[in-house]
Image 1: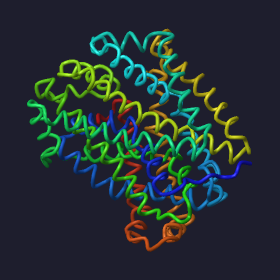
Image 2: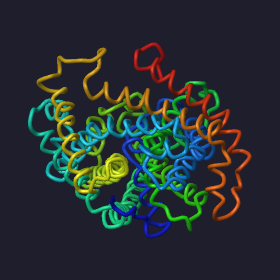
Image 3: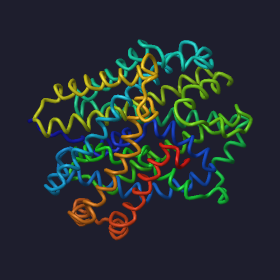
Length: 449
């Protein structure tokens, strides 16, 4: 079995974990939900939940990883042998997500190239539909994106994941800030900025809270086994509470800036119509290219934006692959390169199937969903909240909160200890159950969020 690596220091860990958390959920889903649920009020609710609910879940997962020094596949069994099966369930989440995430990463890679080569073509109505329905081109870009992801993970924790994060995360932040400043300084952006930043409590509803809760799982890489995996590489000398706060601040700042960048730009382009901020791929791959095409220097701005999204997608896909590879190394004593190649081959095979689900297999659906949409539904609407809820149950009632608190307090007092106990035992499981139920009802059209 390979000797377990550790991050070289707190900066490496924080940037790698933040890189995992900062992904398509921040740059794609967050602005759409913020626009739909009242702008400023959604932002306020999200921030409150991030520093309470999100913090509790993240610190729990990081502490489990460092305490056990194992991937999620084995970590839950080490905490309580009767709950070993939860580790398998937690590992199944990234296994499901990895193929279609890499396919979407391929779409982003293609658009980055397209915006550099000819941004005007990418803004045409038929461009995205023609691209995803092709039987070959999306697969080529899938291979490019997955190949980069695979190489980073093969190089390991220090030479691969940590080095990539130390380069891409500062670049990602610089590009995000630069684009946000450019967008908010444009003459027609004021209405969008006002809508996004000024809370209107008349727009506050239970659906707003549910949508913000669900977004936390996407934005913070929770219940995917990733934070447990990265926590297992964290030195016992580092302060978990402080590191978790820094990850959370970085992740939330990127989500906030993404909204500040996208909402005013689309508002200006659409004449103040927030419905133009549609959900899913249409926002990223149809609406935004049109917005950039209508701007001065739009080709440069569009290329920078898709570079930003590409960096975010890449750091997240690396963390998803690492969560699976780490489990195989722990469970089957595989060499890193063998495990990475094996999972990559699986990712390519299933990624190709997902891609063809938009083309020659588009007539094939599962409960009315495309192959990719079904996998996204199972992973994000069912297994993510289920694993998160069961993790709280294990910590709250099986191993008890003191098992996590003692790990956090290796390097000083846990300032939020009493709040943590109340959250992880009672409040978080109830909130996550609400996410689980609402996600399922929403997917079947019973509830609209």
